[in-house]
Image (cartoon, rainbow, N blue to C red; front, side, top):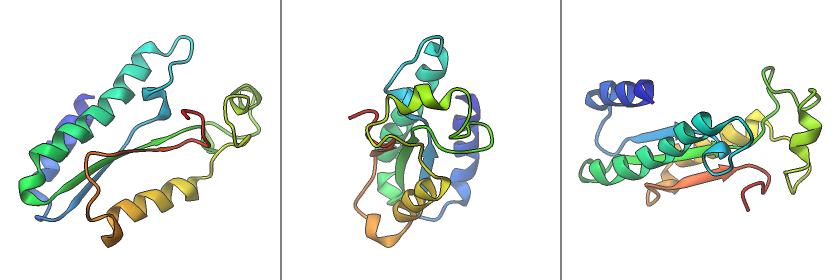
Length: 130
């Protein structure tokens, strides 16, 4: 969490009024799995930072939101990996997400159509936290 806090604070003088901060957390901030208590707590803190900073930075019209991906098909967590079948059982859509699906949501939050969204947490998890 220190890196998120220090990095965001360092970036603030360089962010124009009306800018965007989009924090990437994890659905693990809402769903704890065995042996992930500390990881889950840090991801819950990402969403809390977004809510707090949204209020703190509203006077500058800087919007702050958090994106919480669920299992996403990456090199580190492949959809065909050993752990994948167990995870898919928790996902109502029955599949891992794609990197492009996360990027699309971040792009939306960074764009003009999201100009009234701040302090929000967007779960992109195939319904896992529903």
